[in-house]
Image 1 (tube, helix red, strand yellow):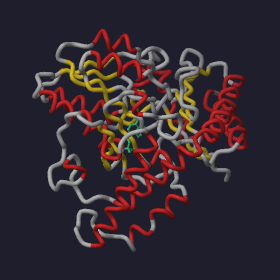
Image 2 (cartoon, rainbow, N blue to C red; image 1 turned 90 degrees about the vertical axis):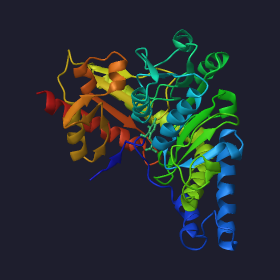
Image 3 (cartoon, rainbow, N blue to C red; image 1 turned 90 degrees about the horizontal axis):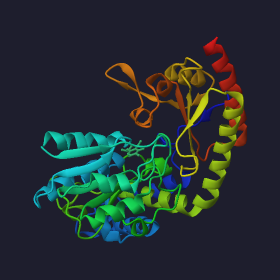
Image 4 (cartoon, rainbow, N blue to C red; image 1 turned 30 degrees about the vertical axis):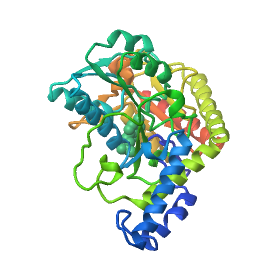
Length: 384
Ligand code: PLP
């Protein structure tokens, strides 16, 4: 069967070059990076070189990078850690958006239970947040603004630089979740001006289970975990050296190949988008037309013109070997429409009748042709 993987925003296969880089650190250089003896110091040296490589790729100092278990932990650590620290200075208000990943919304909801106030800003029909919205929402008590760099469902890229400028004028700390933008578009922390940034390795052909949180010098943040003093006390636990090596190698490759690969992915994405627009007049493209990640195509089928269940569509595509996701998520046993699409103003039925295609290294133009043909067959069968 012709198999096509089009879910690279969910995860990516490990790059063989990353695997090769990691292997010696499982068996040969296996020491605990906190041990004082030779084995430990070998591991420590490798860990710090990995941190430096990662820091260099995103324009920060090595001392500003904390390794975590992934994007979810980075977001939780940034939001809860900064909020608890800022409370001591009398600030208890956090600003975020309705279109954030659950890894941001979840900790924000937890903060509300602790007595913090959280503003969830609406997004426009492209999934975009404007710096002016931040200005209006800022209060004397606002201590943290957390807005994602690029949306994982629709790919819209937010104006983080302007958002950071506005928030800083007010003395608030700025966090951005850049999990999806790493390796796809240029990411320079200094230029963006944010104080904290969440990253994850498995979205860029690195290993699952490792991420990073950039914390700029001087930013107050309480640790979520308590234990040893690893990661300068901000994230205790024995350092995962092989995964750190893999993450650094994956970043080097992703950033090094980004220009050509992102252009290639955008070419494939645009080809599919054009084909879908031509074939299906009920198709609505979600996300910003230009300020969008190059590899994401999110399409809804207008519920007033075509009645579809996205989940059924996903299953039917899967039966033909094509892996995509729908615009709904399973919550408490029932299919809920995507909170991002609802925030963008799609009605529930249209939001549920959605497919997200996310391209990656494994895809070719042949795949686009196969997807279009299959989609035609499957849709015609489903709407009959
Ligand atoms: N943030 C965004 C925008 C994501 O897309 C994801 C993963 O889907 C995460 C956070 C969570 O990252 P991880 O899977 O590394 O915990």
